[in-house]
Image (cartoon, rainbow, N blue to C red; front, side, top):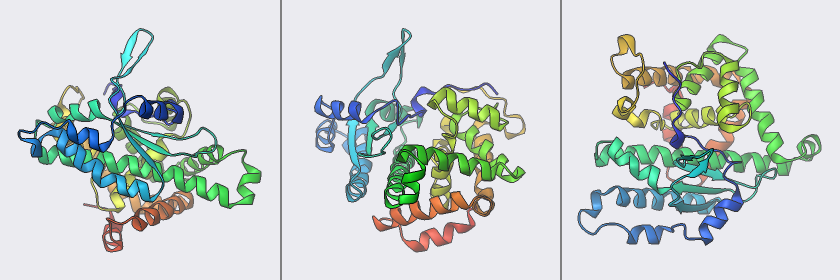
Length: 316
């Protein structure tokens, strides 16, 4: 399987700095009101813009409760080495070092483009958007919880120069704990293949190469693993699963006995789901991170503790 370089999927909290986000807001990035005004009057209820507006509207109160900013960008990409790079779906921005001023930026055009990828099916598109929205909320909460933990602890602040250094340390620790067992290593690599859409990632070294290539540092994939496990434990679709049949559009993989790329990726997702209870046992650091993130999500409403408890088994 050839490594895919799907630019729209990647995000980098460092590449998209808070300064850029704030400048975009001052320079004409959308609010929810302006997005609502742009909806076509005819058939508005099933248009992709309407669905985006509704899902953003659901997200914003939760972010407001956590003092996390939110903005909508109509950026179409940036130029690098003479080529235009597409923006991601979302970006979680924050101040480098301190992790302060967490802000979620939604990129309108890549999200709208998924309407065609989902064959203009409102239900499939809504599921895709919901998973992507929740994905970025979990990323923002990860940053927020690490920042608060660092600021509350004199021991941590004396050991690490800033909150971001501590965050990188935690991600590295989770990899180290999981990679000690074959089950943990297999789960990490499965999560990486799903996220990077790259079947060739079959070792920790190749995972590190992908992390460095796309995000500039080792260990980035762990924040995606935390997000994937959080979505699984809440009984939700991972954003990778929510793509459904879209996996087979514009992608050429060797799928063997699975028949379609969708079947292959869903089988990989099932493998990750089944491994979740073992991952929690293998990595105390992962368990601690999940406990804090899940507690924060529950405090802002919308998900009951009963749903979380029921999903502990994880297999679907």
